[in-house]
Length: 130
Length: 110
Image 1 (spheres, one colour):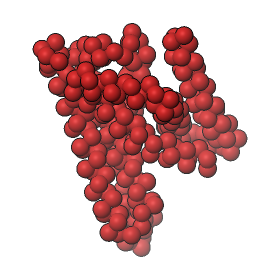
Image 2 (cartoon, chains in turn cyan, yellow; image 1 turned 90 degrees about the horizontal axis):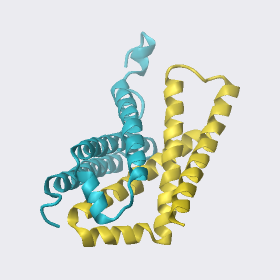
Image 3 (cartoon, chains in turn purple, brown; image 1 turned 135 degrees about the vertical axis):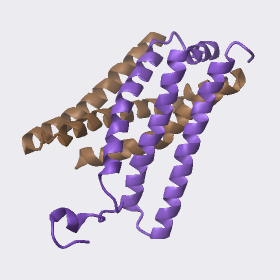
Image 4 (cartoon, chains in turn blue, cyan; image 1 turned 120 degrees about the vertical axis):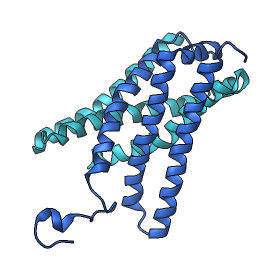
């Protein structure tokens, strides 16, 4: 910790021990989430129904499957950063904090992988077999 | 104060219940008709509707509160009166949007 400038005195402090990169990424993913989730909700609202065949046919279209994959990836990226801050603020014991952040990373990457795989499977196999 | 903690609560809820629900829906659709119909049966049960309505409200609250953060990020809206009225507006808009959306959904079913 420096003793000179204001930035030097605060650098490395805070519960995360690092600076603005996380904050910027949280905003980037938030902006992307606004676009992707508003598109998703409007699309769901416009679907004629939620029967299996209708939903699978909808998800199989390239211009649905790709934004859906982007949405799942961005959603889990955003929630990983958001929950990270919540954990850093409320879990103070170092070992528990490390373990909780580890579980968070497993959850975020695992959840995104499962969601993206599911969309890919529907997009590549719709109409082939069910 | 309240608006900030509600951003965290709704964010945490969406990140767990919301994200798991979304992945469950996608996984069920990818797994076949039987798995998908199990999902739909759960989602359209009374508890399912309660969770979906709760998630809708959490989404709108987090969305509008997040947009408020974007405004604050550019350095605007820190005057006490402005800040308070925008915070109240976020709560009101979230409840109104949830109410209107679900009224339209449920009216369409009848």
